[in-house]
Image (cartoon, rainbow, N blue to C red; front, side):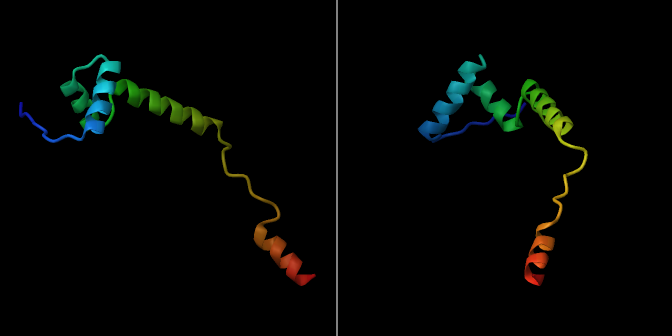
Length: 79
């Protein structure tokens, strides 16, 4: 398996990565891999579940404003 070494990492980036690694009980290298891949499967699954819940809570089609703003302006101009 190939390896990667990163030098001169800014302190704030290093500290943020270290914090997330400790919180997830991972090594710094494991956390870097997780972040390079995008998200871990638990986070991805949770994100998809939240998005599906939001989709289900939306009305089937957007509500139409009646009368439309254009119609209101036309009516006002005609008066």
